[in-house]
Length: 192
Image (cartoon, rainbow, N blue to C red; front, side, top):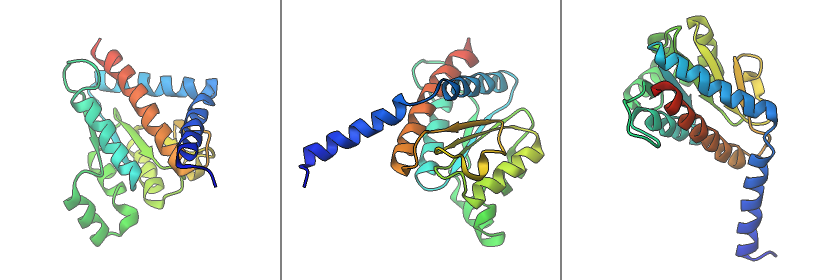
């Protein structure tokens, strides 16, 4: 049985390997996400993040980076996470069902100038897929952070940021890395 140190080293190496295996196409899509997001912000739109579980935490984290700051002191950038209002989440879940907790908010809050950002390791969560469909009906730019296959979201979004892994832990680590890189670019491009 490997020692704890060996297991820690193995997991660190695997995390690095996933991030180093990003294809040139994925890197180009990350850049396109940052560019489209900055353009939306400059045009008066907002970024709307959402996801379940750890992805919900990542959605809130990335929205906070834009509203507050990541690297530089600058004006706040319009971003929000659909996971941050427990009253809305529980009311929608109770009155309409858990599969509607995000789509109801998208119907209420999203405008055509906005960017809707779905985070889902599987790309198959019914409430996330339904919200993306609601975002399509609202005319917003649709982005999904997913795992390798993209799941059901693969054919439904404008930009698929699919991490080359099937391990949810590695996917979520890479999602946060992508998010930080994109937020730094957005911060530069939207406030230049």
